Image (cartoon, rainbow, N blue to C red; front, side, top):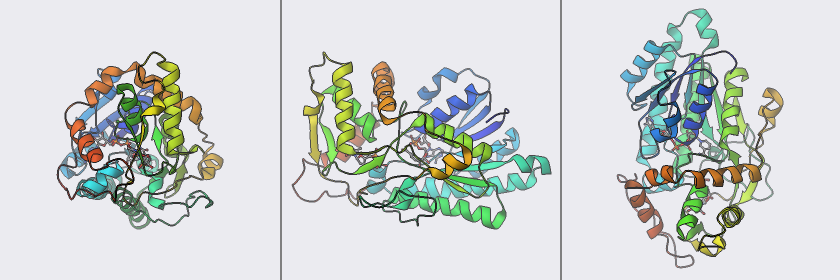
Length: 375
Ligand code: NAD
Ligand code: TYD
């Protein structure tokens, strides 16, 4: 974004949100950061801007209508960038309720407040206002090996409770554009990786476990394909859409890095072998363990990013090789961050998610019938 703005960012203490907040502050923007600090939110991600007066952190829930309305009227943002969500598929299987509350109800609360705020603005401020909804490629469902990649017109076919809740939120945003003329845009991005990702997701989990000599749990046959994007590339894509995207449009974001999970894990292991040659666990690949598959596991995601590339001139700066090396190095350089996020509640999740997945080939994985306690 070229000139300096005030942005209301939701979920700015999470993985992608905190990367975006850091870059927005570095560009001179003022950020009001609304985050509930769930297990996935971590103010440690933002310690480098702790005393920066351009960063106003507010611990609160996007479902708190009064709070959202107050923040809008007090701070007069020119954009809302909406990251806040429950984001982990396995947790959505174990406990979908929080996903519906935050991802659907929370988006509704924001849209309602954003509409009232937008309608209260003077004509010039209205022209510049944007609501950017950050979403996922998982809304499109799953691809067979030869299928073309997801494009913006691919029909929605969400398969997990997480994907369904994000699809529902995308549909609400679409309706608010169509019905109320709210100047909103949607980005649907592929799997991100990079600094500050909570180690429940594939790449940081594998790094963490490999460093500790623990099993590296590969679901099913490990041949599921994801299309990986380094997190700062996602952030530049969001900035490009905020700045130059067409109101009401959707932009698919991806780096053209399709990899099978097993290949990803092997590459992480090879990087650790190189960067930690004295570890007692070299070769780290010996730790790979096949475990029972995720129920309803989507086989392949792939993004066709030609629209954002050709219309907005956005391109990913990192290849998977450069991005993964930076990521592994970042985790090696930040043991305190890892220690901090892996205490307490994290251990309970690991016990719950992986205890049920005994090593592969011993019957179906039973989904724990748990609603509360998903965190
Ligand atoms: P994350 O789980 O790391 O962070 C989510 C953040 O939202 C946390 O800081 C959490 O405290 C906050 N939050 C959760 N519920 C809240 C609530 N009710 N009110 C206020 N704050 C709340 O997630 P992430 O990986 O950074 O993903 C951010 C967004 O990007 C999500 O909307 C996700 O669907 C989307 N996305 C993620 C990926 C990915 O690979 N991680 C890919 C595409 C899109
Ligand atoms: P994840 O990081 O949870 O992202 P998503 O489910 O949103 O794609 O998982 C990425 C892939 O890695 C997915 O196919 C599931 C798989 N996976 C494992 O094989 N083992 C694990 O321990 C985890 C967390 C994921």
